[in-house]
Amino acid sequence: MSFSAIFAILISVIFVNNFVFARFLGLCPYLGVSKDTSSAIGMGMAVIFVMTMASIVTWPLYRYFLSPFGLERVLRTTSFILVIASLVQFIEMLLQKVNPALYKALGIYLPIITTNCAILGVAVLNIDTFFKDGNPLPGSYLGSIVQAFGAGLGFTLAMVLMSSVRERMEMANIPRSLQGVPIAFVTAGLMSMGFLGFSGLVK
Amino acid sequence: MSKWQIFKSGLFKNNPVFILYLGLCPVLATSTSIRDGFGMGVAATFVLLGSNVIVSAMRGVIPRKVRIPCFIVVIATFVTLVELFLAAYQPELSKSLGLFVPLIVVNCIILYRAESFASKNTVFSSFLDALGMGCGFTLALLLLAFIREGLGKGTLLGYELIPGFEPAVIMILPPGAFLTIGLLMGFFNWRKNRGKALKCD
Image (cartoon, rainbow over all chains, first blue to last red; front, side, top):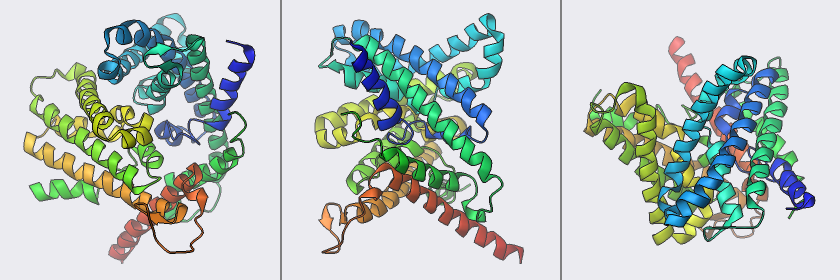
């Protein structure tokens, strides 16, 4: 896989098809944890980490365990969600033992991540983009990892942007019925309008 | 709580989308047309019904400590059923819903109802609760899809609404979804608050 192809995947998944603004994935943590910048960055890092790990694991699972036995349609969703859930548990335990400082920074976000649809979303999306009739396209393993990493970066970008706006919105005089989630959605709509400007950048 | 109240609570008072803010990703993504929105609503309702009934029937068997993985397996089974059924009988709908059919697994409404209602109540009550929540979810999707398709394409179920109406394409693009749901949530909050203010007086 050439460098330019990797670059194209990254740009596409960070800006053009941003997971939050264009694909509507991971909205619950996006709205829940974006109240201040430091927790937004923490959540973003945890998502990048888990997304990359998840695609490192789910690609071989699909390629060598599901598709050779003709199980790819029947067991894909079930096996992916179970693998992701146990992976998150495993990462949590490992971090606690190996790197307590990192665990302290990411620890509280890890359990919520299991039901974050962006993680399962990127795993399924990798299969949809890099497999054709159950056979992998050339360079697809690296491609899927890059796509997952980029998706995490795009998610972090969206989180950080949103949290900086919301920190300022605390001071603003907002109508009572729009306070909280509704105004956050309107803000996200305006931001996503900005992100529409990137469409057509990568085909 | 009477059976009718269990059913009704999911429809309006505890509407999963507008009041509880759950399961927002599929609501925004699949409300570009009424057909897609309805398909998504029915698919999620089916999964909710199946998982609530099975979880409630097995509530004495599942150990407390491993309940979440058990719920996820039950939910994933029903999602796979829906996935295969759609691919076989509604290939067009399955294509336009795309990624969001397997993602019903991580729809928060379903796990939330399994955990907070079905694992504590009888099979029949859980069935009614799932039906109410599912209908509430479908109604919210239809409302959003009605606004977005009407303004964004100028059509309703593919039929032209007002001849000569120039559609605002932004409404079927992602920003339209965010703006519409934000304003609708604001509207429902306003209605709720207005009722409260009257009672205080």
